[in-house]
Every structure is written in structure tokens, then in C-alpha cells.
Image (cartoon, rainbow, N blue to C red; front, side, top):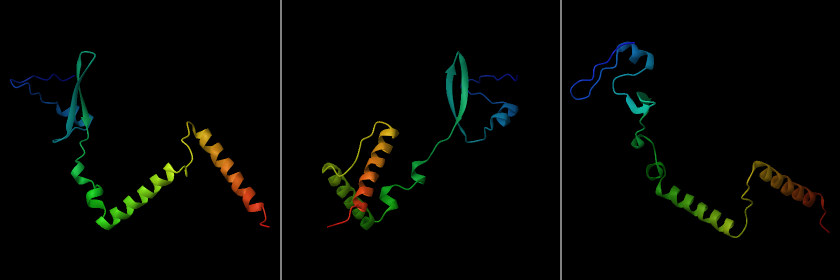
Length: 113
């Protein structure tokens, strides 16, 4: 087990064998923590949010208006009770689907007079 010296600004050098085994490269981020009295360095991935699209640059203003209108309509439908649920379990959800499909099947088999 290689030894590491703490320098005057509390800097350390990770030995090459340890770096290679851990897959640590220049510029990588390491999270430092204490576990059972030991210093643990864990690799972490930093995600730059500016590299990912968001609603401001992913859609045109016309597309955003359409999306907002559809969301508003959906919310109105939910408030009117044109929705099912909420369900506490997947079994409740499946039972609801079966009941609704049976009602639809009965309506299809009934002949209009």
C-alpha cells in the first residue's frame, strides 16, 4: 500500500497505480468524505446544465403556445372529473381499466333501437 504525504497546503498526490485502478484522470471530480474515520475519495460526474436543452430553447414560441393550450385543456378536463384515479396500487389501476373496458364492450354489443 503506497503512502501519501500531505503537503503544506494540504495537497496530496494520488499514486499512479491507485489512479489507474480507480480510473481517475486529470480534470475528474472527486467527492471527499469520512467513513468510519477514513478519508474516502469517490469519483463524481458533473453535468453542465447549459449543455442540455430546456423549454426556452427546445420549442418555438408557436409550439409552446400549443403545448400550453393542451395542458390547460387537460387541467380543465381533470377538474370536471373527466379522469380516473388516483390509484394507490397498480392492482387498483388494472381493476379500473378492466371495469372500464367491460363497460365499453357492453355498449358495443348493445344494438341501438
